[in-house]
Amino acid sequence: MKIKILFISLLLISMKSQAQDVTIIDVVEDSYNTSSIDTLQIKSGKPQVFLIQIQSQNDGYSIADDDIEKKELQKNFNSKDFNLNHITKQSYIRLENGQFIDVSDLDSSYGAVAFWNGKPNDKLKIQEGIRLSTEFVSEQLGQKKKSSYITNSELQKKEISQLSKNDNFTENSRKVMNRFLKKYSVSEVLTISGYLVLNENQTKVKTITGYEVNSKGKKIKYEQIFLNEFEQPTKVNHFGDDGKNVYYSIEFIYENGILKTIVNDDRIDKISYNDNQLFFTSDLGGGEETSFYTLKDGVLLSKRILIMKGDAGYEEQNSMVEEKIEKGCVNYYINNELSSMNCHSELGKFPFTNKYTSFQDGEIMQSIEYKVTKINDSKIEIVSKNSNSTGKTTAILNSLGLVESIVYVSGNETEKMLFEYTYYE
Image (cartoon, rainbow, N blue to C red):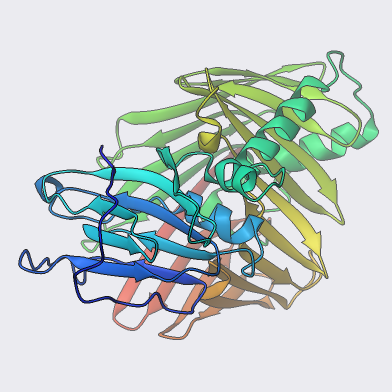
């Protein structure tokens, strides 16, 4: 990476910086005209920040999709503090006082943050690398601000360090545990956005075997769930495309009816409790993820904190996802940004409705509405609608109210699944 600051007279035709908060110089449709290098002339006056993220022609002039630092600068500072210029294409940047940033070499990649206070007699300040751009800019402005990934990482580590080392298993813990176990004892295809709408009562069920039915009518096993006499899962097998070989398995170990250990193919999770909270830490190899589960208004809420091992200098790779009940909806956040929303009617009552909405950068990306109607004791219908299509799922129940088959139809698409059960006497 290289940044050249040259003090020369401005001889070329100038281009005034736009008055918008963010000026972006980039590649259009991944094409690049080598006969034309952008020249950006900056007038004195308002402070300027240049976030430089450029990849070389050897990388096909691809624009880095890492916009963490740009979002940090936009979030942590007032737009009145400075103009933010996001430079993603080889360019010349000329300041009115004669200073010059040369990031025009087609064979070079550049990553840096530059600051000019807009005063004709003052020089550019440059930081090699874009990480901690908030701290760099804050220092130039005489402020004391931290990147949110630094602050969040500190708070997350503190939360984990304060977890109780001793179990506090209560009746509230049992309720959380029982609902948590339903994640494994009820096939995911029988839920809507994680909510239980089918097979909620599995009294005396010993095994559940799920099959996909292909276009030729052949049953292909995809899942098998084993339960103990307390409706608790003891083992879950997931099968490959051939329906014969187990590609992933999970086992559950209990002590006096209390879940203590989950054995996955690649790790072992030890379960702990603190009243209305179930939690465990998973070693994922490169990092450790601590998962928390609580029960509120009958809804199981999750929170997961991922701390990378040896994260000093890489705190932006740490992450947190969390579900919260807000205004009657379950909102899902990724690093404190709203990712999706589920707004549902009362659980356990028909008709049951749910509206799922996903977001990106505050904009709605997708919206799906579900309506679950109990036709009679042996038939339930689920209608799903989005902006492009409508689908209908018909579930046929046996005499115990358990799903025997589901058929999904949307346009010309049809999918069918079958479920078989064995029982304790």
